[in-house]
Length: 114
Image (cartoon, rainbow, N blue to C red; front, side, top):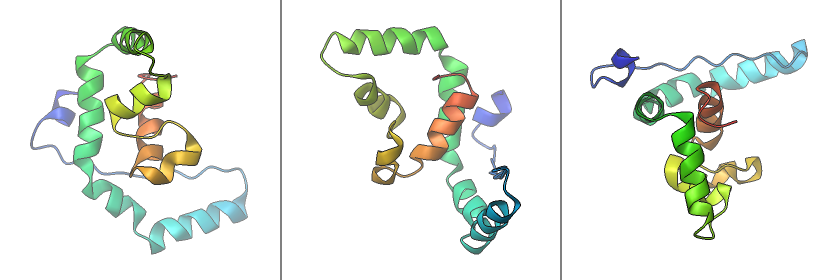
């Protein structure tokens, strides 16, 4: 983990497609290749390093307490999520902030959010 958050680490993104439908997987993989999505996401590895850094320094309990604290100020979970992670929580709003889907997937994988 320390090598991931180190300043000299280069992260690369590999997208795994598993929709269960061979035709859809082929279309998705073609889009990934045509639009160079893995290269584009890998070029923004600082965003990914920030998420790993957050996970390394803070516990899941810390985030639960943070969300509960802000709730007393009248902010909902989505508001706090946006401030803390710089991403949209709702899928319908992913287009409003770059990498919202990617960040949410990684935050779930790192068990920072449920």
